Length: 176
Image 1 (cartoon, rainbow, N blue to C red):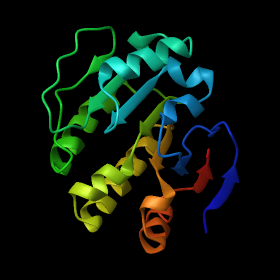
Image 2 (cartoon, one colour):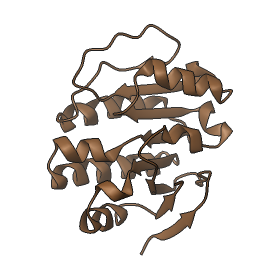
Image 3 (cartoon, one colour):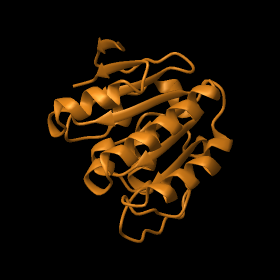
Image 4 (tube, one colour):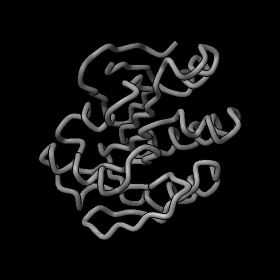
């Protein structure tokens, strides 16, 4: 059974993967340690690249060390220092996987990969498909010895779904 941690700040060891319960408002990036912004890839279903850039700057990070995969059904244009992929629709799990495969080339050992809202994927994709995507991603992030935080609003998923997802990761954590 994965371990559980309750803490206002998220701390993961290199290679460790966690299902993280986050508040429904705000950004999970606010709970990352400062050094996470040295090498960070964000799969963002809730914030545009511009908003991610603002959070990185507020936290004192270097936006050029951060990549974003925008998961949105809307076209978006961003011309800033973050590395970004083309937007991908939240229902296109294959497209998310392809963009992640490319983006993982930039994630170093000890870096971070953050899914800012797994709930959005569950809204648009079948649970078994989302499960397979996250299982594959967690394995790849773990193999790179990078940290993985897969964020969910706990009250917005059933106990069964949460327990199934939790089984993919080394532990669960809460920053609520």
